[in-house]
Image (cartoon, rainbow, N blue to C red; front, side, top):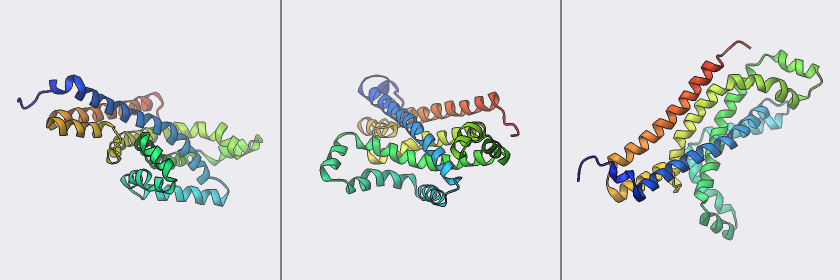
Length: 231
């Protein structure tokens, strides 16, 4: 058997397994982004709210999530949280691809906690006079944020959010520990069946690298298209 035989993975069942894993990893990335960004904005607004209880709740969320490893979040949502549910519900979840749902939950909360701090920093970068101008026009807190402050803050916030997206893409690989059939899980299965470690993990490495470079290119393109400017 030759030392390097990529043809083993170029077609057939092993090829399909790796491609399916890559597809699921991309789906985890997309779904998590769709959920994490609105949650991050909500948490950031809560931290800037005039209500102490909202600020405390948002601060607690961020600190608890960020100070616990993502691996622990994955294991909690897959093994721990279902224990609080009735047994029939728990069995139904485990029979219906719950590992992917648990991975999305863990990734969403973890990513939103970090993104919320970027959004909050972007909002705080906007001069207070902008908020005062919105209030002078008769807008409330939420209306001022939505119509005046957030559109300006997002221009400042997009670059760090893209960086968090890059981190999220890499973090999807941790979902393998709970049996989510993403890229690393499928790569491990193919390697165990074929013993072609080099070819399998070259494919996985290049897949992560290419998507990471694409995200980085988007960040660079955005910075060229919308260079930072003083607010």
